[in-house]
Amino acid sequence: MNADVTGWERLLVRWYYVMGPLPRRGFTCILIVMGEFLFLSMLDDLVFHNTGLYLVGLFTMLAIVVAFTVATSYAMLASRCDLNKKTWGSVAAKAEAALRENPSREKPEAPFTAREDGSGLLRASWEIAEPLGISLPDHRRFLRRVLAVALVLLAAVYVPHFVGRAQTMRQEMETAAQTTRALEASFADAGLDPFSIDPTREHDKVSYYVTGDVVDEAGEETGSSIRVDINNDGQVIETGYHLAVDPALSQEENLAQAEKDLALLHDALAAADVPALVPGLVTAHELFPEFREAFLAGSPYEGISLDHYDVGETALVDGAEVACYFFTDAQDEWDEHSEAYLWIRVEPAD
Image 1 (cartoon, rainbow, N blue to C red):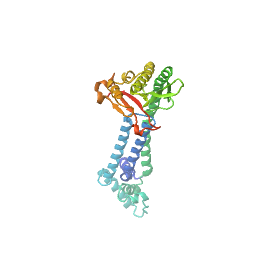
Image 2 (image 1 turned 135 degrees about the vertical axis):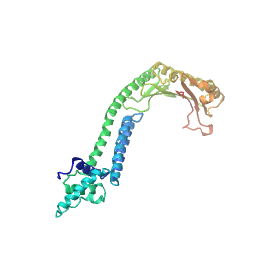
Image 3 (image 1 turned 45 degrees about the vertical axis):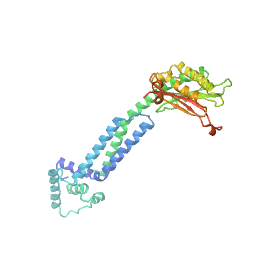
Image 4 (image 1 turned 90 degrees about the horizontal axis):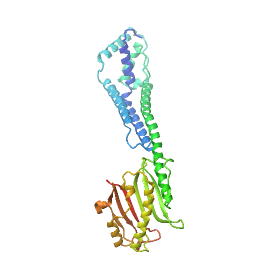
């Protein structure tokens, strides 16, 4: 190696050489990093059920993208402007002097990538390094290694987050299971036929549910039931009462039976003594007067829909909003597939 070449000059030639591919491949590297971030974010959402964006991962991805963008911009400027002009000019002059000192030396052919690079950094760096005996790294391997380090770094940032999310999910599943088990036991004690999917079997991002069906003396379902939705904090987040209606009976008879079933279902829920997002989700259990009047004045073949927009404050109970519906088919459309029932939905008020 030429003794007159300084360490900074050697470093600059090697730096320009490995930076050579960036103007063409820098954007590809950025896309690959962003693609990995998108994959990890999808994994975070779909597998580990994170409800928000993992900010540490986002900032790490942005930092890597900024680094690649700055390096790519620098390489593009260096190939078009005289960055480090003094140092580059000095080492270029030394390369020319070395060629003049050895005019008979056979000039080796430039590597294919350097030839294809035209007048860019790769070719310029190689033409200076070769007569001065400056060893050059493999620019393709260097870029691949830098990209690999960036991808590993981004993935490593997510590892402790995923471990934490897995532990949180296990805790949430057990918490939700305590509530579903309490509801199932209470429904069974009340003579209902309970059903739920055990939360400890599989974590659900949104909620779990427990149902209880009213059964007659023969053990057959009557069509009336309750459904309770529970979140990952073990809290009731919505309650629904499905109350059977028989078009062959009078409206008064149907209403009396529906209210009897409603009282049975609600008592089973109240006896479970489970936490709720708002108290009304486990306390609200009555058809408000406006709905009762509309049902009694109607027919088994005319639907009804009333909520807080229709009845105002009457539909609000202990922080919960009650909506009452009567679903049925018109008499001329009634067939063996038709069903008439009351549906009471109780959810947190807006």
